Length: 209
Image 1 (cartoon, rainbow, N blue to C red):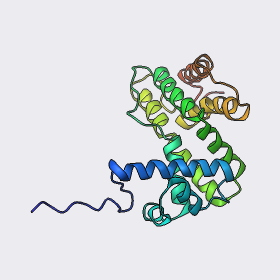
Image 2 (cartoon, helix red, strand yellow; image 1 turned 60 degrees about the vertical axis):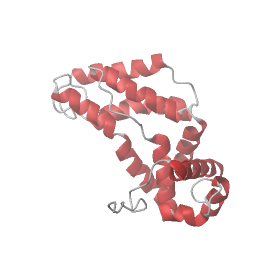
Image 3 (cartoon, one colour; image 1 turned 180 degrees about the horizontal axis):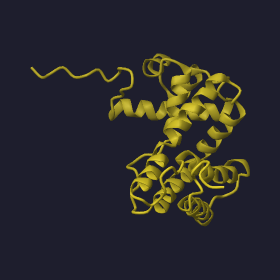
Image 4 (cartoon, helix red, strand yellow; image 1 turned 120 degrees about the horizontal axis):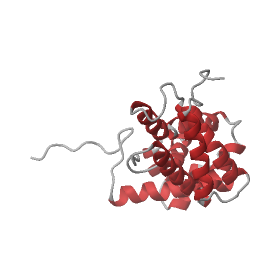
């Protein structure tokens, strides 16, 4: 007798492949479309289910609440996939992460979701989701910067959060607020400026005046 398989519907687990993968894809796409159309406060699971072509109970089995469903959708849109870049220099690694971030945020879904979050930050669930997603979003960036510190490319005490904020601030301002194209030249200039400043100690808080 084969050993019993684990339950793919336990919290935090999802069976990959086949119908389950299609359900996840269709539901998250439908959720993104509804978020772009009506925002978080007015989003109804019934409407998502109708768009995705599934029963409402199918959604609730995987995502017990609206905040769970929206969180999974936002992670699917904003979270990078694949291995951490390791191109031999922190500038190249940050540029690779930046290119992936611009590509995701440049889609219609990405722009709509970012605008929805900005407009509904007064909603406590949206604010909580945004904080959680931001903490997860910066993890690969911080890992790249901490690796550069460990190998002596950046000085000890360089603040990863500060460096990420300075890179992504002008990039997302241009892309999402001004709705202008972010080309590779602009992105490279921002990354180069931050890395050069950090190498001279500019990312050490309170270190140099």
